[in-house]
Image 1 (cartoon, one colour):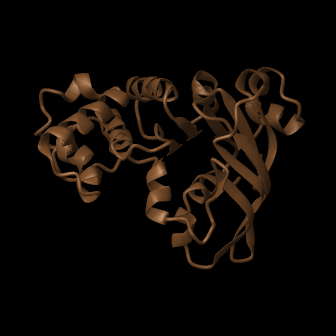
Image 2 (tube, rainbow, N blue to C red; image 1 turned 90 degrees about the vertical axis):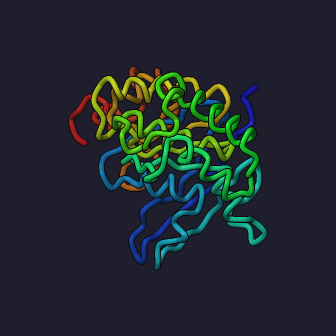
Length: 253
């Protein structure tokens, strides 16, 4: 019997003014899996991610219809706490954005804002987050040094650790390896594979090859619509829709 969905979208539409960015999206994203969102430019991938923790609320002139649920709770319910929603559904963007602080203080920043001040507890939270993002062994002896001195791949994993320090349930990543070299990309991908043991991971991959390496399930988007969704091996080897096959084979995109 399939596991209950962590996130569900039910006939969800999203508009920027008069422009329909997402059209009638119906998806069930399962817990503790990596769900990859594929598609050409302007297919609605980033809008989908930002809708799931309502970062789209920050954009003037937007509107939506339909529903998004997390654990059966409608995220647009009037009673929902936006800070709590964004804690539960963390977001990592394409360009790493470490704060001009030490490695330790970057990870401790969020918990401090939430009121955690006990040094020993902060140390535990920071170590756990850095271990989960597969960065601890590389930085454990220089936690007081500037995060800006880390490599690009290390900075991206630090940003993942910063999200993890807030104990989310879902981690969304929008092309987190777009500016990284192959070695750094492999490190980030390794961390994602480990993260899915505890978290639901939603990934807009840097390319199709990355999705094929790490994803459990894939949704192919085009023109703001879901063309096809299914297990990664099926999408990459036996797509049901000709548009999916053309995209996977590199005929467009």
